[in-house]
Length: 209
Ligand SMILES: Cc1cc2nc3c(=O)[nH]c(=O)nc-3n(C[C@H](O)[C@H](O)[C@H](O)COP(=O)(O)OP(=O)(O)OC[C@H]3O[C@@H](n4cnc5c(N)ncnc54)[C@H](O)[C@@H]3O)c2cc1C
Image (cartoon, rainbow, N blue to C red; front, top):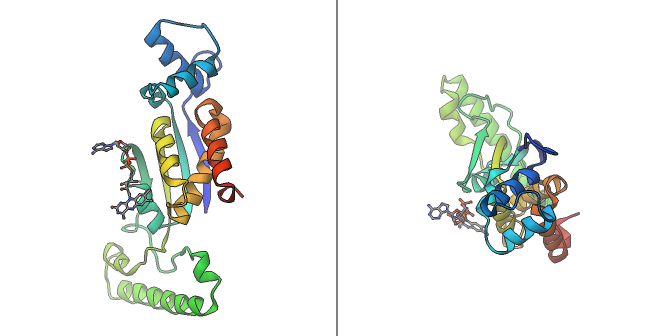
């Protein structure tokens, strides 16, 4: 799995950081321009539940090598924008597949897996040779098929997403992905994500290895 932070809101005034924009948005509400400590001001707004102001900043990630099982969970988050590699237009004769650790570590399970993968590949190729379009041949592809997706979420949705997906209840792959996203983003917006990173890391150190 590769996760890259590829874009971040830039404020066209002052120091240009997304947090400077969020502070400005908050200060407009109270007509309190340039008074007080920015981080303290933003934390106070979050604590009182004034969260809409952090919707003004967003981050874009490019994620590849995750399974379609994982991307399906990701796109359930509705307050976001997505662009995903298409199985209608991209050939999948030799598809990259994500193998769960539990299967990779068990020789018998691995044997079952390898046999299945060979069947999938030959079925896809045979269907294509029969003139079946990629959009129909893809129906034999499994949830394991690796995908590439670009996701943009605003900071409010990202905090919500991290809280839901960096927990023991979340499935391992989306948890791993969300953890990487938070680790990449926190240094760029430490007031909005630093405390969350510290809190989750203290609660579940095993997720942050
Ligand atoms: C551990 C876990 C197990 C899960 N298991 C399943 C499962 O078995 N089956 C399944 O179908 N899904 C499952 N889900 C997905 C889950 O139900 C949500 O669809 C997904 O997590 C997206 O989160 P969300 O709905 O909070 O928010 P988002 O889509 O990220 O939206 C953010 C917030 O906006 C608000 N919002 C967005 N849209 C609406 C709306 N239409 N009406 C009112 N408020 C809205 C809500 O407050 C929401 O929390 C699971 C999720 C987790 C974390």
